[in-house]
Length: 291
Length: 193
Image (spheres, rainbow over the protein chains, first blue to last red):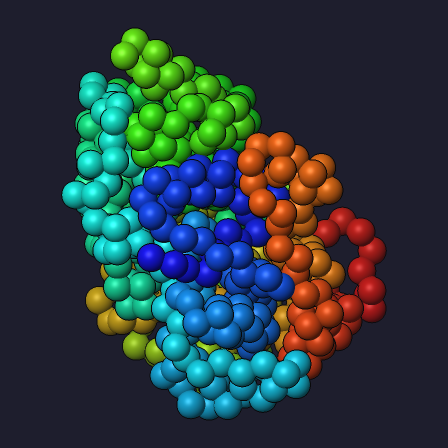
C-alpha cells in the first residue's frame, strides 16, 4: 500500500496533528506515504469564482501523482471531493479536458487520467480493512461515548465520490467501533459545521456550529470524532468563540479519527498531537492511564 | 471584518418582478457555465431550503429563490447580493433535490459569472490572492515549518509557485483579480468606483 500523500493546505498551516497522527497510524498499518513535491492547492476555493482555474490547479496535482505512478491519499475532505470531482470532469468532459490539457502543456505537464483520489477513510476501509484495524488496537477505548461527524466532503457530492452514504455517517461508525468505543446518535448527524461561510457571515457560521455542538452535547457524548480538519477548526479551535457568542457551554473535545485510532493502538498522546487541542480530551487520556 | 447590511429585500419577494431589471440572456449564459446546466428544471419545491444549514439561520438566504431569480434573469440583483457567496458547499441540497438540479453548483456558477464581470466577495478575493501568491489556500507560517521537525514530521514539500502563477495567468484569474471593480464585504475604497 503506497500512495502519493496529499495533506492539503489546512493541515500544514493550522492542524499539523492531523498529518502527524496519520503518519504514525500509517506506519503501524503498513501504509507507505510518498511526499508529493511541488503540489499546490487542490482548487476548492477557486471553484466558486473560476471553474477553469480550479480545474487547472487540481489536474496539475493529479499529473504530479501520475508521474510517480501512485494514487493519491489525502487527509483533507475538501481536497478529496475537489480532486475527485476535477478528475471525473477531466475524464468525462472532452471539451474541458482539451482546455485543461492545453494549459498544462504550457507548463510542460500532461495528465492521462490514471490517478485515483482516496481519502484516508477510504484507504482504511477499502485497502486496509476493518479486521486489520481491529487487530491493531491494543488499548480498546471501551466505555468511551463518541459522536461521529465525518465531514460533508467525505461523502458528498455522492455522484462524484461514490463513498459511504450521503445521509448517514456509516463510513465513520464502523471505524470508531473498531477502536472499542461506543457510537452515540444525535440529531442531524450529517449537518454542516458552518466553517466555509465564516469569512462571509461570521454570525451565521457560529450559529450553525453552535446548533451542532448543542445537539451533540444533548447526546451525552464524551467526544466528537471527525475526518475533517475544517470541522475540527470549527468545533474545537473555535469552540470558545461559539460558546461566548451564544452564551452557552459545551466543553466537548474533538479528535480526528487517526488520533483516536492512534491512542487505541497505544501511541502516546504527543505522538498524535493531542497538545494542539483547545478542549483537552481528558476523558480519553484518563481512560488510557487507568489501564 | 465589517458586518454586511441585511440583504433580505429582493425583487421577487411579494411576487413582483420588475421587467426593466431582467436580463433575458442570463439564463442561457448560466446554462453554458459549468454547474449551471439544469437550473430550468427547478419547480420550487423548497427541499433545498429545508436542507440548507445557512437558510436555517439567515431567513433571506434561500437556494430555490436564488435559482428562480436566475431563471427570471435578475442578474444585477443577484450580483449585488451577498447571497451568491454564502453557500457552505455542504451539498445537502444537491443530494436531496428531486429534480436532480444542483442548487450548490448553480450558485457557484452564478458567482463565476459575477467574477467575470469584476464582482467578488472579499473572503474569496483574499483566498484567491493567497493561492496565486503562495500556491496554497492557507499560508504555512515559517514557525510551523520549523516546528515540524520537533514533533517528528518530515520537511514540508515546497509548492512550485511559478507554475501555479503561470497557470492562473493563462486562465485569466490573475488579471481578473487585480481588475475586480466591486468587492463585497469590504469597507475599503474599491478600485474603479
